[in-house]
Each structure stands twice: as C-alpha cells, then as structure tokens.
Length: 338
Image 1 (cartoon, helix red, strand yellow):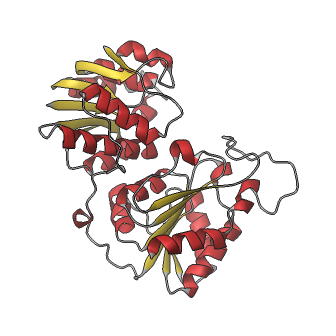
Image 2: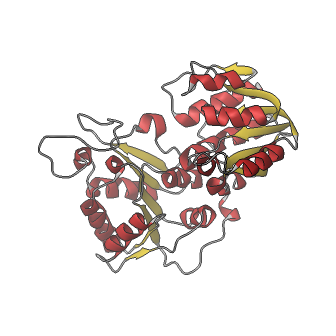
C-alpha cells in the first residue's frame, strides 16, 4: 500500500505526525509513505524508516508572489501528480494543505469540517474523518491515520521511529553535555534570561557542558550572551535539522521552551524537560518516553497570547514563569537523567 502524507509545516507539527506513520507500519507491514512538506523541514520526514520519498514545496515563499513563482508551482504540482496513491491523507487540515491534497492522485482523506481548524479544507476530501477536538495534537493525528487506514487506534506511548544507531555521535562536543533550547517564536514563550543563567550555573556545578543552538540572528545573540556568563556554556555552530537531531540524540539531557526543537527532542527519546507558560502542554506539549512538560501553575496560564499582558507586580516577565524557576526545572531534569 502506498500513501501520500500532506503535512507541510511547521517543525513541531511535522514531528507530531511521525508516530502515526509508525502505528500504520505496525498495523500494515506492506505500507510505505511519500510526504509533501515545506522545503525547510524536509529533513524530518527523511528520519522515518517508512518514508520513501519526500516532496518539498515552498508555499511560505510562493504566497508572497504567486504570479512570480508560477513556474515553480506548476513544476511542484506535476511532481505531486507523477505517482498515483492508494490514499492521500491531509494531516494538517488547513486550506493550504487541502489545496495541495487536491492536486494529488488518490483517494483523499482528511479531518471533517467540525474537526479541522479551517472547515473549508474539508471540501477537498472524498472521506472526512471525525476526530474529537481538545485532545493532544499527536493523539489526533494518530486517530486520523487509524480511522483512514482502518486499524485499531493505538494507546501506547508514541513511537517516532527514530533509532539512535542511525545518528552518528557528533564530533568536537565535550561530554557529558546538555542542550538548552532557548529559542522560540512568541515573546510570551521565552523563559527569562536570568533563569537560563541560573540553570547553566547549576549544570556547571554538576560537571556538565552546556550547548546552545540557534536558528536566527536574535537567537544567536541570546546564545552568545548566555555563554558569556559561564565557561561551561558554548554556542553551537548553525546546524541543519538532521545535524541537530544527532546532537540531541547523544545528549545527556535537554531543557527547552515550547518550540519545534523541543518536539524533535521528544522524538529522539532523550531525558528532557519542556517549559510551558502561555501555551498548553495538554494540547501541544512535548510527548516522549523520557520527556516531561512543565506547565506553569499560574492564574492566567495558558493564556495563548503571543505577548504577556499581566499587569500586576511580578518577579519576572512573562509573569507565569515565576512558577517555574531554574531550581525546579533542574530538579525535574536530574530525575529523568537518573
């Protein structure tokens, strides 16, 4: 059986889809997948052993000038239509992913109009699958695949399909080491700088080297500022997703905020603590065998706001993170590493 998966973005959402492929491969041993994904995230599908072909698209780039990119769009549509599939599953449920799904050759499955984020997307599917909202994103995708491919819905811990032996140990890193994933998108998801500094000092006292990855200039400047506070902290060279996966896979432990890399960490199965303040760990928390999501116990958490607007007196900003100090995070990480 040949299945085309449409899940184009973003990093965390793409990672969330991996366990569904593992479930399907266990239930249907003959199954294989092709995957349509944004070109910047194409490393992720390649990590799964049951993905044969990755078809990169550049929707984020194209939509800035559809007319100017019409040749590239036509070429991508032709590539998508080169093969016929038994099923085409839109695992995203957005209008943009539905349009891509509509281009493919195969019986189209996707979330029903009451289940997906953008109800108009359901018009593109020949089979609408009802999946209850209010569940974790990974659970919802696993249910979508099980109901589309007709096998028993899984209840076990998600298996992302990543095997440590497939990831070479990175050279030039000093062991034992930790990764601190300080970068994220919303201002309200950033853990306070002073907490990161304190966490680095706690790690240094225990003999760990700390590595700080970055993905843009702002994150690089933050990493350089944090590394300046301790000889044990170092800024990683800019890395591809595949290279970062190798670094994560061989780390002793990881601390991160709500970000795509935190979800990739969960997929790698290393001891990890992910910190949640403005966003909901119940709906989009990192989920893995040796991973915990810490939700701030605060009156307005999760607020789902991009910028903290808490107006009362607070020790730090965003205010909810005063409920998740460095000492608590370090204690939780130590338990996982033991």
